[in-house]
Length: 526
Ligand SMILES: Cc1cc2nc3c(=O)[nH]c(=O)nc-3n(C[C@H](O)[C@H](O)[C@H](O)COP(=O)(O)OP(=O)(O)OC[C@H]3O[C@@H](n4cnc5c(N)ncnc54)[C@H](O)[C@@H]3O)c2cc1C
Ligand code: SF4
Image 1: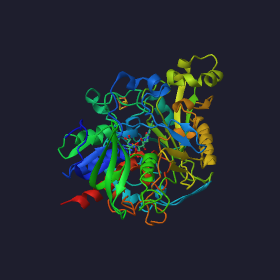
Image 2: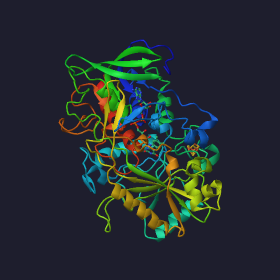
Image 3: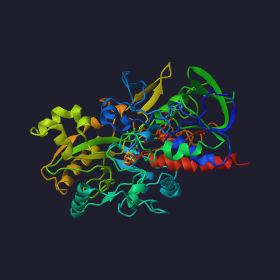
Image 4: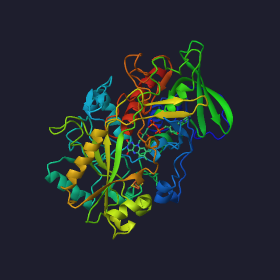
């Protein structure tokens, strides 16, 4: 069955999956072939295909695809989070930079503000699942270029997306300067050897936009739609899960309470997987408190909602004298400062390119930009801009957390960590620009990439609220992402991260969903 249109019949399912993003969508794909009855519950709808998908004004200035929701910051002030409630979740808008965590990210790392803890599993444990996730999401990349990457059991399924001329010049300049630029791993359905047959047209509207022609490897296109034709898979859209009910002993989820078109329905499943994204998964567990779980479902450790991370990021625009005619810019990465170096004893992070600036999205920055280049119009500024994204690891500290209030609303307290490392990375970027033909550069924090001023609103890389581990006293999930305290509850999204590293998180969520999917598949096998 494809999409259920009518009010749901309270049928029993083998597996209920809540949320269809990188975690939930991939999990559904992993389980669909089992033939078991699977129910996907997604609070959003399919993202509309319309010309505005590729229009920077509606997308970046008006926030057309930001789903209405209200969270509250640490001072109790309401804000609109940068969330995307659609089939495919945040991956509908993501930049499809599909990185593996580095092997060192799985070990304890010392940072300027504290310790990034070790994972209970190693890179080697994840490696086969990374390979499978790269195959599924058709990742383009060149193994062996980046000295920080781990071993791989299979090559990337597609060659790296090629650099356009300006980016190639930058890459060459960096290499001459002794750096190790690499082709960024990317999930787009581009066939450069056969452009007429390629789904992807290699346009400028990728990073932060939905793909109008469905050529981005998002969880909707790659994982959910392909399984909707199966009789054993049902998707309910507009179905927000508001509570999980348990048996009196609290060992099993016995009811999944859904609000849909103002109606309430309760579904039952042998196994329930919560994949609502780090903040909303914590919200659901906390709002499911009961006599058996007085502090929230699966929260005997008091860790649900804690250790929220979302990276310490900066978008940066460099203005050079040379024009930058690049169309698809997100092809280059630099990890020379990812770990400690001889010059700096802490990991500083990852540098990558982001989608090319355009005048429309720059409108809000006009006063600053015109000060830098007074003789230029915004269109001139945009045509000279080279755009970077700097990511530093933030630490999982217990005080950075999601809580809920009496009405069930998300309250998000977050204070940044590792600012000194992030500043260091920014300084390194400015230094390396000297090797890229941008000697007379201007460099500017690019705030228009995220048009909301409240730092916590930019929750694109949210993770960590239900971390996995071996000790039920300090973690919510076991190493298979099953709740320590329940027999049939799994959390399969970025919530499980004990630390976040400094590369984009989606591939790790996808790989983990394939890994946990195999555990569940074996469990439900006849
Ligand atoms: C603009 C942008 C750019 C990004 N770029 C990159 C990138 O280049 N590379 C990268 O690796 N990552 C990127 N990310 C991050 C990446 O998209 C996320 O890390 C990833 O999607 C997280 O997966 P998830 O399964 O945890 O959550 P999501 O993908 O957000 O999925 C959660 C799903 O649960 C649904 N849901 C929530 N609450 C409920 C409920 N109560 N009931 C039912 N359904 C519910 C949501 O609607 C959503 O579909 C980007 C994100 C954004 C926003
Ligand atoms: S670059 Fe390709 S995948 Fe990205 S939006 Fe354009 S057509 Fe879609």
